[in-house]
Length: 249
Image (tube, rainbow, N blue to C red; front, side, top):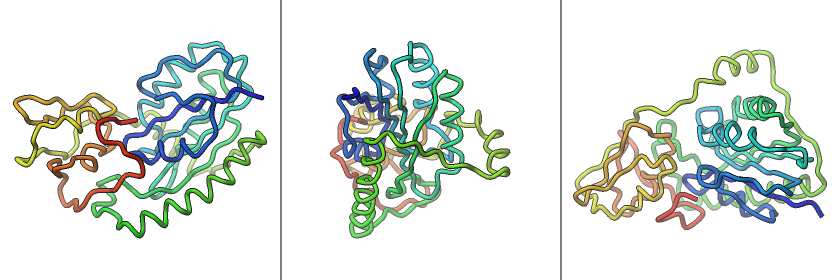
């Protein structure tokens, strides 16, 4: 039986929830784990879509880890992408990034999850909506597990306009400033710092401070037990599907 390894990047817990529904012999944490077992034959990538493309840690994992190893044993690479509104160019960008690393994407599928991206969804979804979305996600993941188990091939095509715009956006993702802030409710517990995939939050004098290398995943906003991390116009926090407090994976 083929050895399957899943490499997962998850800030708010959506992609971790999805990755745990899939079968794997080992799960790696993108951004922390730097090596893929040499005898891996099936590699899965599970991560969220950020601004229609790949999160920087995923791009770095492909460029710095996958591209630097001998991938002759890999016979099947699949990807499951989580998204709030749309995957946009993420599928084609992933395929291109893997090709640049000397790999071929065999299967890619998306799973819609509650949207955690504050610039688009500034009101947290209700518990009922969350439960319904997670139920639909589990149902879809049943089909995805079957497809992956049988090593089916599925790569969705994209229209010319999407390909042209997507090419322009391929190298557009980057870290940058955001409008997150920390107010006086902060007690310096450090949960946000340990949950930040970019290591961009520091605790000093019992107060969190957000730096300039933000990935805009907004895990800190959703996970703060005191609701001390703010974003203009945002109301409520997303109840994560996994117990993510104190860790970002």
